[in-house]
Image 1: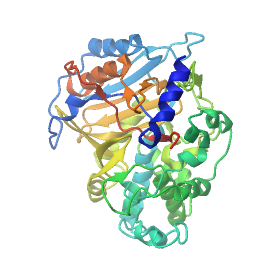
Image 2: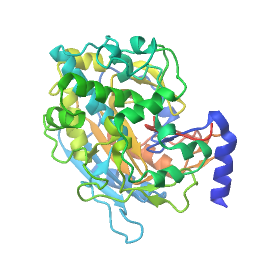
Image 3: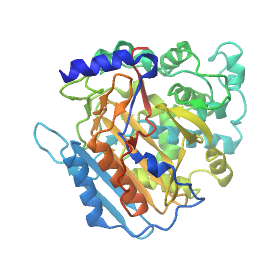
Length: 428
């Protein structure tokens, strides 16, 4: 019955319902109403017992497994709660590897900005200068490198073309494509065939994975090196990340959790997608990492260890973009989130069955990276809106406690569904 009701809800939502892979509801509406500051306010030290209790609460609310890494200037905490495998009861561990989805975009953006610093790429140059003919017509001369990186190119997302059954309210494509190898040029063709989301450079922009596949092709053109290889050598290794990579096979290369996908009730019971050919995500979302590595990465980035100050300033120039029905200030592969205790920078990412969030204060002192192993577990109303789950409220508490040192006050308002990053359009 749950599956039938969920399918009906999705199909009657029409164009208003855009299902995107999400972390779940991370932040309450009330959290986002407080004005941000230039730097995060001093948060209390880490209350390790309270942090673990907040993770336990997420599991008790229904999440199969969650693990988290929290850091301030003085100490680091890592914790986990729940199971990595619902069949065997194998527990999750804090240092497990996971697919980080669209957090990969920050890695790709850093690589492009390194080329900007070297003078081989200009942010405001048309993409056609580097990839002539890739974007046909006049649009190819209007779309710039900057508009790719901040999602104002107006180019649609390729996910509907790569997973066509989702447009019919069916999960069949997820299984059909489990071992399918996509070429980046093929993904770009899907994106260019989708209806444009706006004029290049116009705001608000619209989040599109296609932008970052094109960015990967551009990186290859100007460096003469495969994009994944370049990012590995010049971003991942430069940041000192030991457990971060672009996997060469459909398997996650180390200890990891299962990845359970529900697709808002279309898959019932939830199905494991931890073994998957991630060529469909390419330089937009194929990286695997750990929570500790993500904190190290964003700390190195924000402290100027991966790109210079001028490039970091460009990265943090934000424009409004639409993502998952919400508007957020997006820079170049990174976005800003204003909490009562200050401004945080980072990204979230989701693939089938795994979702991750990483946020850091501007100085890199206060950080949170966490992941869950069950996605799109919420119910969908007939009007296409998503009904928050108790899991979402518990996640709000963990985020608030980790970054601000206190739990978010309970309100009657629903949690704010965060900025999802694995666009999954359903039945238009």
